[in-house]
Image 1 (cartoon, rainbow, N blue to C red):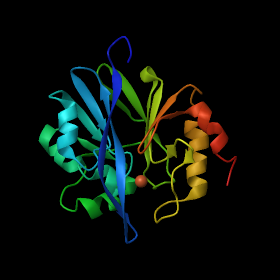
Image 2: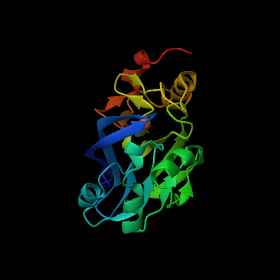
Image 3: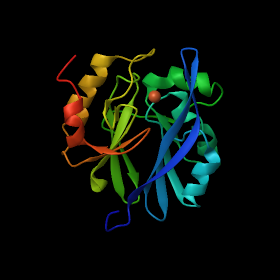
Image 4: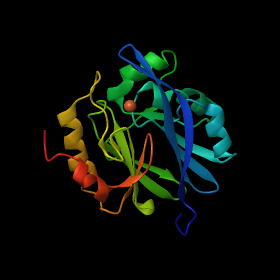
Length: 208
Ligand SMILES: [Fe+2]
């Protein structure tokens, strides 16, 4: 937590991830960035009720989707509708979104370099394609943190073995956009435990 009370809170929700005809059980990290008055939600996964409980009456400024895989966006429409907050997604992942929410569009686009305000501070959107074409990370300098979705995990790059993904692209995104952040930057991931930029440098190949 900073002196201003701005902090990152984690909610773990459970459900399934389906792609390319296979379905897996998964736990997802939902991140709330904000203070006692308002929060920005990163990845409304699986369970809108659990996220709403964690929001605890605070104003939701936006529901940001790091990418369009169904495990990360399953509760985004419901949470957006319930709170009035705009649901934001990079347009390159719109096809993935439409498979999950065919009758409810996102409310706005994420774009590289975009700044989103919350609790008197800003997060900056980094387009980090590779896990999906529209994958984005959120850099929060005031927290010395970056929220990477499924692009960078504790242990290295996210998965690229399925459709709409590419290993050389994710490696380039991580090297150019994430490993260039200060080494002490905490990496809050879409699944599993935190890491740091410095710790992950050894887990990312020079180029592929
Ligand atoms: Fe994913």
